[in-house]
Image 1 (cartoon, helix red, strand yellow):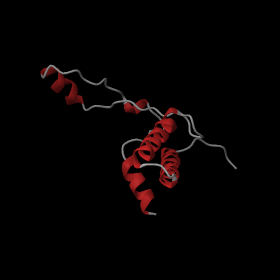
Image 2: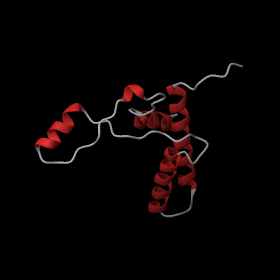
Image 3: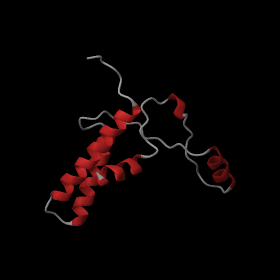
Image 4: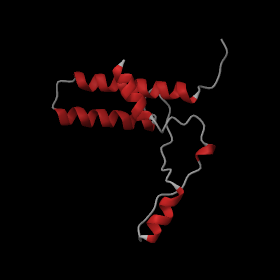
Length: 105
């Protein structure tokens, strides 16, 4: 078996699978709805932070080029710009769609 780097799709599938399993876990708990939601949200943040069997993920703002100018013209603070071409294994962009698809299976 050849050892290789995971593809972005493979990493995304693992992350979405983890989120789906956390949904099932928190849904099965016999606690009030708010506690379930807090637990589920915490589980997602824990996964992003790398405190599970998944690694830490990069989560950074990536505003459009016009956002900075617009905010500055309106006297508002603005988000830092990032260069997504330097990021390998990026799973963001359609996580919500992948999660919705996973729930329908």
